Length: 391
Figure 1 (cartoon, one colour):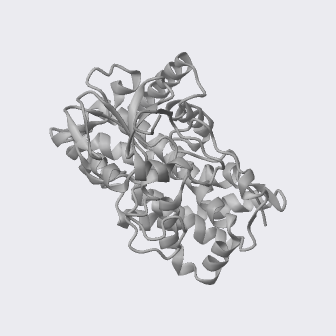
Figure 2: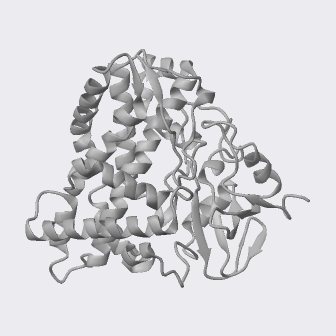
Figure 3: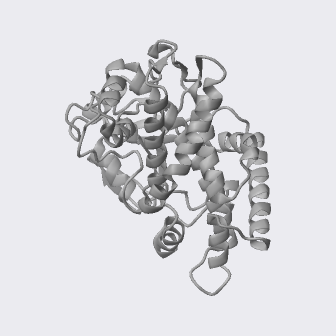
């Protein structure tokens, strides 16, 4: 049976946590539109070529949810198409500009320094994921939303329910969604009664008049979406970035010698990340030709930005991690009108992470062989169970 006829199990198997699936290159060259079975048992078409993935991400005919979706998440989702989506991005996007993120850098660095003080006080080795990579973005996004960081364990559980495809039962997922929605609804109500200097308070204030403010449902979806994204995605990417750099000591040494490469290093880590998780799922609203194949209306399509970011037709020496690579039009944050709204925040947190670690812990090393690092299985955004380091 050839690849065009075979139904592959997706996500594809990886031999190690930091290395790409051996099937990516074969699919890109021989079967750019592959048939796959996803964890919920349904079938989908998988895209792995850079041009096809970019086209899918930018084409509004690939929708975020099927028309008949009645899942619990859909009840508090933000608008994803047309003028409503543009309105939502205008209102929320004002909080995620590069200028605003630059203003937050000193506070982020202060949090990072405090976390390293706590971590290094425990000895000469530890889990960077638990003691640094996860707390840092949680503190930052909680501060932006005006949410108590002391509730981070609850956020972690709820976020994991929303983002893990295999760990929880349908009932556990439903309960977590309901609890998360109830928590955020209460938080929004409290901010409406007693506003403060945070994103949600500002959005609520802009929504009280007759302007283009957000509805209560949109406020709820925004709060939950930002908390999940700010908690899980950046936290996991911090751990993966550091692990990729320490997996080849020459990379870390090059950064120590030339810290000005931090910005391009962050972009290259985002491109090079092979542990990208599930990718993105979309649904066709009409027949569409992509990758040389016509897909009928109603088809579920999955794209792998991580596989696309290793496409030799899009990046010279795509299998090499080049810390000075430029330009670097990777798809880690998506593309087009639906590209990640918080990418400036994520970039800033990753840059601050490297700047502080290089300054504070220049002798940092992995405490296990890179091939022994373990993936978090089933997680939509990809991640490592632990990042054991010594200094």
